Every structure is written in structure tokens, then in C-alpha cells.
Length: 193
Ligand code: IMP
Ligand code: MG
Image 1: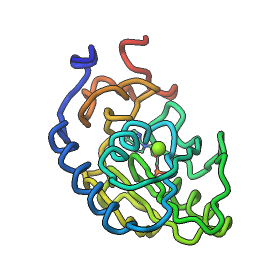
Image 2: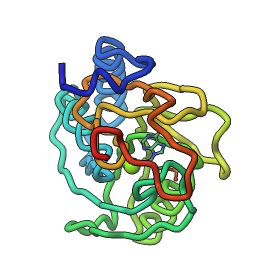
Image 3: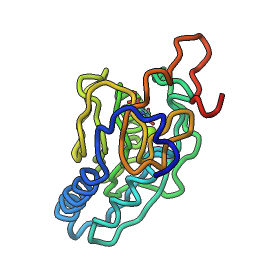
Image 4: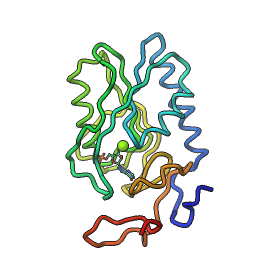
């Protein structure tokens, strides 16, 4: 229980399913990167939980770094304009880089990030995403490691937020419809209004 349960509509991905995906993805990454010098980059804030849990299932030495980008703000649709709020600390030139993302919706954020990182000359650059929204992509992307596909709905939990809340839910779920008003102001969680 996290105190958010009253606002949750439907659990789309259970905690058990997430655990199974972590084991599967972790062993794929361990196998594929054996003997290489892996640098894992997490996209803040959404990927923090996934990255931390995934890393415990990757049985090899690795380094970590983080980037923070702005995409949605408090609304639920991306504008396509991505701003880097925190850049990497490490130089990725010549490194084997694995970018860890929470969720891919339009794909615009990831597309921008990949272009940006590619320009820094990594030896390799792959993506591990926990969730992909089926049919939502506006650009074609190659996701090497993928946890789940879900329909085009807004979800929260396991790192994913709505107006900065719900990140601590151990599962991924939709919010009750009454949660979103149709007004011109960005909708706010009921508990904050
Ligand atoms: P995209 O650029 O449309 O692919 O959106 C990517 C980013 O928007 C993700 O990294 C998330 O931070 C956020 N996002 C997209 N869909 C959702 C969602 O359903 N819930 C919470 N955040 C989301
Ligand atoms: Mg994100």
C-alpha cells in the first residue's frame, strides 16, 4: 500500500510481471555485453526505479550515469521539444552505452536523445525500455531490450509519474478517469487540489 490506491483505475502491469521482465532483460544484457565495458545511462526521473532494479539482474561490472530531460511537464502529451536539464558526467566516446528509458510514447524524446548521444561517438548505443505504447510512435525506433507493450493510455507507477506523483507504486496502472479534467489548465491530481 502506498496511499495512492483510491486514485488507481486498473493495474496493467503487476509487480510480479515486472520482476519477471527484470530477470529476462537482465540475463539478455548480461549475455550480450559479456566481456565488454558497459556504461548504463538512465533517463531521469522516470527510469530511476527500473534502472536500479534492472542493474541488480545484470551480472557483470558496469558504470552508471544519468541524464535529465524535460518532456511532459505536468500535462500528459509531449510537445516534441526536448530540453536537457542535466547532462552526463562521463565522456561516452568509444564506450558501449545502454540507454535505459521508462516508457516510449511518441518516441520523440528518445529520438532526440539517441541523436544527441550518437553525436558523441559511442562504440555502440542500444536502448532498454520498460514499456512501449503500441502504435504511438511518431518516429521509427530500434528498441533492443523491451519489457512490455501497452495500449496508448496514460499510466503511472514504478517510476512513472503524473504531476510528479505515483512514482513509488510497485506496479504500473491507469488512473481513474475522473482524475483528468478537460479544462485548459493542466490537470492536477485530486489529492493536490
Ligand atoms: P515521448 O517523447 O512521447 O515518447 O514521451 C517520453 C517520456 O514522456 C517518457 O520518458 C515519460 O517520462 C513520459 N511519458 C510518456 N508516456 C507516459 C505515461 O503514460 N505516463 C507517465 N509518463 C509518460
Ligand atoms: Mg522518461
